[in-house]
Image (cartoon, rainbow, N blue to C red; front, side, top):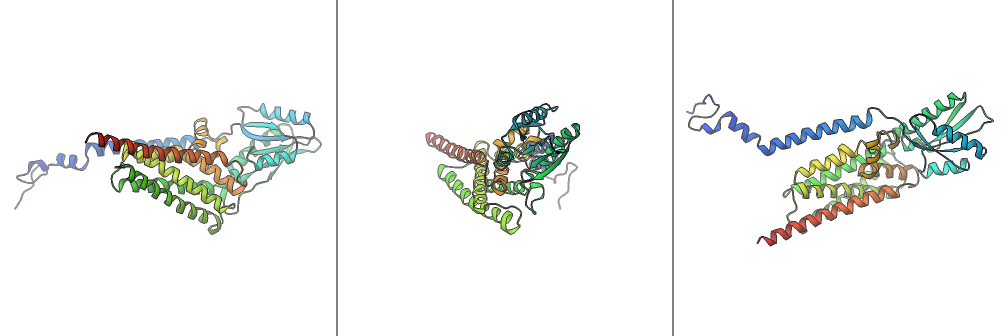
Length: 352
């Protein structure tokens, strides 16, 4: 019969003590990964709280028009002079042009000035984000009250009944992004974190593309006709979803080609830690602090959210730029993945 020693091991095997078991259970590499996870967790907390804890309007684009050029120019000047620049007013010819600019996503609202009436009218588009239209109403309303005037608010592009505060587009994009990096991670770690050769890298990208097409379709169907959360073209949402999923998946494969399994964490930092809070979901770009406001449009979640809202409510207006951003991520990341596999293959051949 064996006896346990005070060190925790068995008689005759002094190497199985407690400290040895700790070293076996948590290797140096594992310890570094745990520290990395902690840093990602803290970055997640800092990023989300930093972006959302104190939303303030900053240079919200707004069209202004009145019965004549003089009245319009005076109103523009008054809005431009508000403390901390909450608005970015621009003069337009008439109400029809103001409405057109809202629907083309050139501005987020419009002030229709009528000095002969006891108050003015504010046109907003809650489909672009409920918090954004609410911020416009508060800022313009305060300016009107300071002049002893009333303000009537009209929602000219309302969100769908099933799209609470315009967030369905954001959650759809988040789901697509999660699928993208999880699928890419599964493909990469199934046979090692780095592509062994160009053929394997190409196969993974092709599988990623097929997955993206399927994920884009079902995401569009769920958000559209199945749950009736988003109106707009299902084929257009399908195309957006396929491009977004592939862009995030290719990005993840590229990071894994660069850093191995650590690349999964890098992809999460870009897409989740930095991308989601700056995407303009809960708070559209003009309400975010400067860092996140500038970062959001160039990352996949932000580009996807803006494009999804444009497709759903604005007949696709303004979606061209975000589609180009996503295409750049998709093509660039796929190219990096293939290039790394070719370089690795050439080095392997050279050492033979």
